[in-house]
Length: 496
Image (cartoon, rainbow, N blue to C red; front, side, top):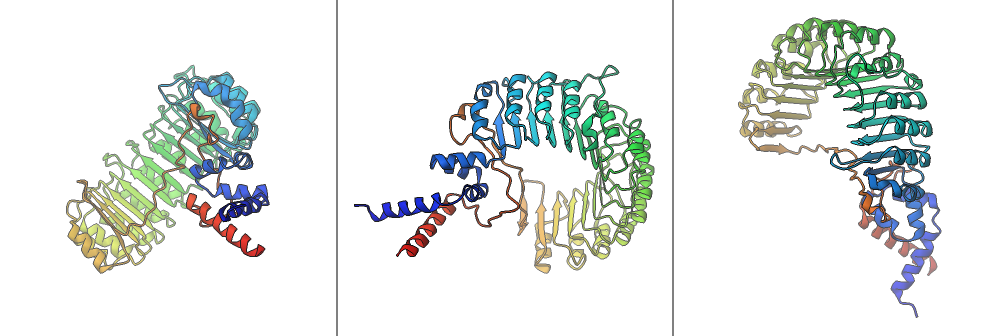
């Protein structure tokens, strides 16, 4: 004779077994990676559905992964986003392993390679021929070279995003093989190059990417002044340019100014750039919305360049100035002319004091977020914010010695809706109702090859479904328990 608990379990089993695979897959997609693994242990059906509904996978790409590839991808046969990450002190997968993966993941749209130093040009060629639907490639600390990169560009016509960091196989100097343009040039929208000895060998690719929207260059050696005129002459669709620690001067900025659709510009630690170059960009790029400048204390960009921005870029919404010394003159013009300015950051400026903060409080009507760091302001400047900037919702003050906790408390007391964050710079962080959620990425721990035997090998969940979103399904095991109890209750009441 069955106990009451056994009857409830039978009823639940009958109910869930009637649930279509598609519905169960949607439930799994709303769970955390840990809960998905637990669900895959319930029964063979759940194991199968969980594997077939997982689209994103992150694996430790050590050499002992190779013999396990068939079993992994027979279970996870719907993967479209794959990350292969290897510890720098370990031996990574080789060409045969990557080719084997590509044969089983022909619908792959995203690939991330990290520290896979045993991959060569031949392996990338084999991968590219099998995964022609690839849309995003990100590789860092790999050792294949220009031939491997060209293989991807020639065989993946749908490629939209390319991110390359520390690609060791690229030869420096005049003997470097040019990269691109290839078939992918027509579809590329984003190119990001980081820490490359000869990043300019990507010049043919950038010039040939006629639909490019975003170009980001970080610490890539070479004279970019020679390349930017060629780029801007051919590519007219760019709306975003990031430059950090690259060799570029006003000559490059003059060329960039011909990109009339430019909306976002980051000039970070490019000490040769001056007010003249910034003024040239501002005069022609009237759609500029976001401007970040790290002057590196070079004092080559200041009031004159910022006044040019104020005169021409009325759509400016975000302004970040680091190591730049604006005065009340330029700040007042920016506040008066840029009526849509919502986010302002002033960091490491010797000229921004209480008078400048009072000017901002009086003039910046649309300002919502203000960040001040290492500037000579005091509590008097904070007091001005109590009645100014009517739309201000958050103020962050860091390492400003003249501002005390009492001054921050006074501002909170007199403007209760304002979020005030005060960091004294000495491990003292005074915060009131910050309410900011930090996004730390996908939070996906890579899977160790030795764990492959477990049903929960995949370490990342599938992307959240846009057509079937269930709010409140993120409670993990408590959610599952509550759901099963409700199902049991409803099923039992319907039978009584």
